[in-house]
Amino acid sequence: PLARAIRAKLDAALQPTHLQVLDESSRHGGPPGAETHFAVVVVSGRFAGLPPLQRHRLVHAALRAELAGPLHALAIVARTPQQWESDPRVPPRPPCLGGSKQERRGD
Image 1 (spheres, rainbow, N blue to C red):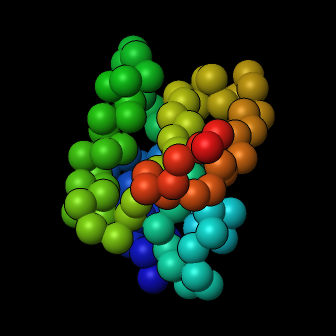
Image 2: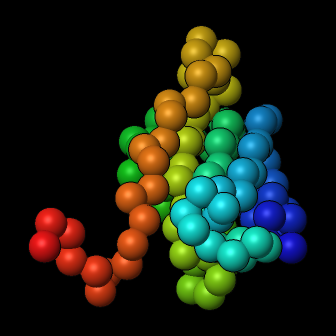
């Protein structure tokens, strides 16, 4: 499964002290087992001194093949161990608006 590959690649690339991989595909109207929408919480010392954009780039680099293929959307929370210790809360993600690019809203 894709979740296992995501976990393995992030473990190898970032040696996280905390890692959550959440399959959120069902929240986005995909069929059961679609594995297209994921959220990750990655806590790693590799993020020390890096701004959020650079942290996200490290995650994207580790998952390059998945993002080019089956992985359609990835929500990322990337923190240092110190940040995680001071505040382990994960901000809620906005609800999926559904639909597709072909649909027009408000017509």
